[in-house]
Length: 233
Image 1 (cartoon, rainbow, N blue to C red):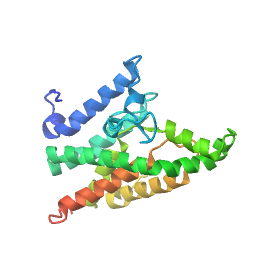
Image 2: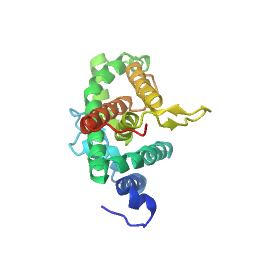
Image 3: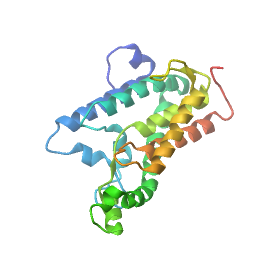
Image 4: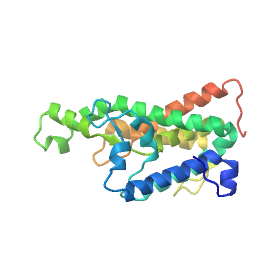
């Protein structure tokens, strides 16, 4: 799929440009296409759930929360911010391969983490209040679990960015001083690890997807770049 608008973003980084367009179109389809539930069809479900289909390993990374704009806006801004630089560095073909591998890697990490998350959920006061047995709570969690979003693939991009350009200074909201990428991005990865293990009630962020994408992104860029280490500094 290719969209031609003759702008610098499309000319210089066509993969990022087309990913932005595809995600936006998929988001609009989630909202406008009725009665078919695109979100349910494309979201990643547990592999042993009756709702799981193999295509969800790919489709989940192009869908976002249809109930608000925050999810897709943040992901697309981050994709543009870091993805354009990484696509210029890797080249468009390799960047696309990198993006898809990170997204699938995030999905695999989610699958591996669901049993742990289900057990943690079954022990929570909110779940116990339903009066169901632990086994029933675990089964219900695994059956109904779903994940959507480009965050896993984007965290892979961010991990690669921190490895390739560690001393690039970034400005973070509410922090008046610039911070180097080698400090900022690992901090967010560690925060995801903490939040994923803690399983705080009401937290719907896919922390294990972030961790999976970041791990795969780092390992892949390390493998590709191990004999040709380049950075801005």
